Amino acid sequence: MANTTPLYALHRELDAKIVEFANYQMPLNYPSGIITEHRQVRESAGLFDVSHMGQIKVTGDSAAESLESLLPTDLSTLDVGRQRYSFLTLDTGGILDDLMISRFEDHYLLVVNASNKHQDFDHIAGSLPADCTAELLDNRSLLALQGPLSREVMSRLCPDLRTMRFMDTMDTEVEGIKCQAFCSGYTGEDGFELATNYDDALKLAQLLLDQTEVQPVGLGARDSLRLEAGLCLHGNDIHPNTTPVAAGLTWAIPASRRKGGSKSGGFPGSEPILLELENGSSLTRVGIQPEGRAPVRAHCEIVIPTGESIGEVSSGGYGPTVGRPIAMGYVKSTYSHLGTELRAIVRDKPLSVKICHLPFVQHNYKRH
Amino acid sequence: MSDLRYTSDHEWARVEGLLVTVGITDYAQDQLGELVYVELPAVGTTVNQGDEAAVIESVKAAGDVKSPVTGTIVEVNESLNDSPESVNNDATGQGWFYKIEIADTSELENLLSETTYNALIAEPS
Image 1 (cartoon, chains in turn red, brown):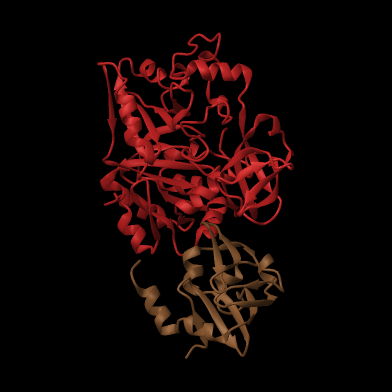
Image 2 (cartoon, rainbow over the protein chains, first blue to last red; image 1 turned 180 degrees about the horizontal axis):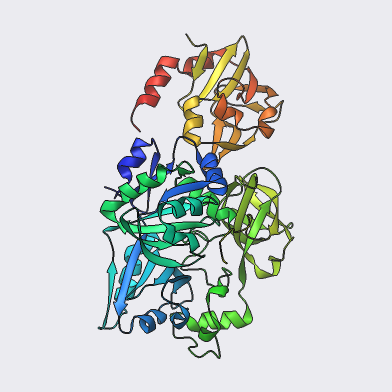
């Protein structure tokens, strides 16, 4: 039997189409539908239940250096009250999972993908020294409020959040409900994620849904929003067989962890990854613009006009904001230049596609 | 009483003499979600009962329309190329896919009545 989040009854009450995802019963969409929900987030504010995601708390004197032995990041530059994107790497140079790591006064919090949370926890807990502890917080929930009006909504309910900037975090209370707030998300829009105790989640969700700007949004629109924003989905666009270099995620590896840096290497797969950073990868993740109206979906083969296979789509679908099909995928690096004309094989037919810039929709993060 | 007949694959067929208009049911469009792309057959092609005659893509997934009868495509609903959402808004009206001239009217006996179809979709999946 699949797990449920504290909002399951609310999703049912709101007449959501429920699907099983990462062993959780989750809302795919509500009666308004994926396209309407997608637009809601681009134009106003949408509430997502992402309580299925994993929250891993790491404490201990050597927590920072221990985590640095797993993540190609530099935690000496992560201040209390800040969050950062990183990933767990494997000895092969592949990506075990991607995550957000936040520093609080007395601990680090890692938010990881739902499908990987138990594996990630075992991986982290198994490598920590005796003075550190890792805890998979299963008595927690996570809500995301995303969209241009989410700041207005949160400022009204919790004035503390008004001045938060992209990737800021804080402990706060929203109308008496204790939260850890994160100014981030997975849509490309300004927004917040709020981690609460399991028992408070329903009350918080109802409070947010009572605001006129807010509508509930399911996993369907979450996927189309992140695809338009060019953000990777672990399991599709990045996985144990893709490297950070091929995936174009080297911006998340600071100079101090690279060759010649003060803390060079020292994470799983650092040798192949740092070598690839110097020499380039054979494959590159690119934006793919189908020229016609037919969506080009994950696993479609990408070929050059002579028919030779040079890659594969990793995520694809319809972008409601851009109003046309969009995709991303991996191609041999020699074919990764903007504007390169290729074909994607859809139902045995070659459809014209072009390598394009990512993201498809500009990010609207509040950085300053 | 509806003049429509149905397939267990969720197509409907409206029979007027030898001409059969084909579409997908309201239940099917609701399950698929918002359609974003429709690929119609070419006029003049012949299809067999149960063959894939059209392709549909929703925001969620790809699917197909299987022809309820054997025959020759005589007309397609070109407006779906620009407005695939017509299928969501009016599945058994504006959202029709194609008209086919039926080759063998005895095939109609394989189609379901509205009562039988409604019982089929009422079963818990």
